[in-house]
Length: 407
Image 1 (cartoon, rainbow, N blue to C red):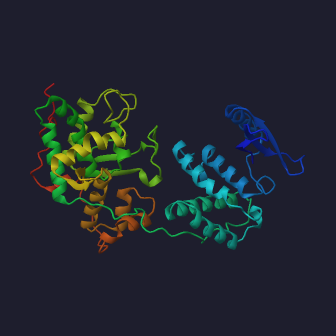
Image 2 (image 1 turned 30 degrees about the vertical axis):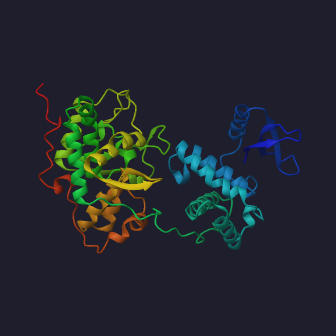
Image 3 (image 1 turned 30 degrees about the horizontal axis):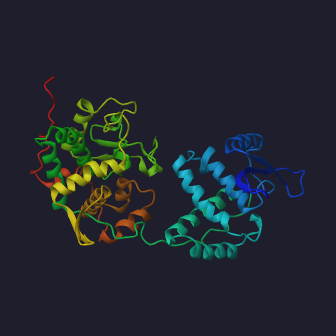
């Protein structure tokens, strides 16, 4: 397979070098240097177009070859028949692959054995920023080896069974708001939406239904920030798209499990539908909660301009003293509303697989790793749609601009 690298020449100048297969040379490779990366990428594209789609031992001899082939498949075909990955995901894969390339593999790929993979694991645990990073790099190596095996480059995936066990997906214990704290947040949203300050009231005409929806659905912030109007159904929300990791574009959910239907309280559904119909700014993406300019909101701005304000209004803060100064910080993050949603599902004694489905987790292991300490039993039950409705009648959903206009 061909690849692109930055090289320093004997004269100290930087060139962009394309290495590609050439059976007429002794090494089996040929090299072309270019002054600009644009020229190099254009030539690399031509090389890929001329190469065969299938892979073989003659085309992929080293781990470096396998990494280049795997990244090309991720970008242009998609792994195991799936969709090509997003640009942000490709960046993550490229970063993790860098550790695989940095290791001095002693043999060609078809000669590697399980002890060679174990040696790489030992090196990885000593040379990566964290154990979590090492675990992700091992997952990447498994994917590379699996892809090479199913394409006939190697006989079997010799990395199978050699892993790095991670503790929880979340390094620190998750923070879960109590029902009383959630009520306080909802009260704060109501109060801000009814503010005598016109600018504040107008801002919270949008932020209030967002906060209610986040609590009532357990959606990830990148999911409700990218919610399109046609995803609102008669019973709830269909999660069909999300912001990608870099928030540069709207994409499909990262995994198939992310596509799901979530039933929510009728009052919250009415509030969101009303805002989408009567108040959402015109935008080319058909979003429910766009900015005034018609683009999507970022997670950072949502947290800074709205969520943190609601926490302060509700008195949900932590006070610390640093350098003799008292600092006040919000007690929660937007993602903690998702943890609250999960805790309420567990309190309803739902089946574990049902919780996994409603949270949009690809694996039940993720659900257990994150919330296993909350699960005391597995008594199957039916989910009660809408957590806001369970919090009590003191939440006045009909106020704050949610009434249907007379026209």
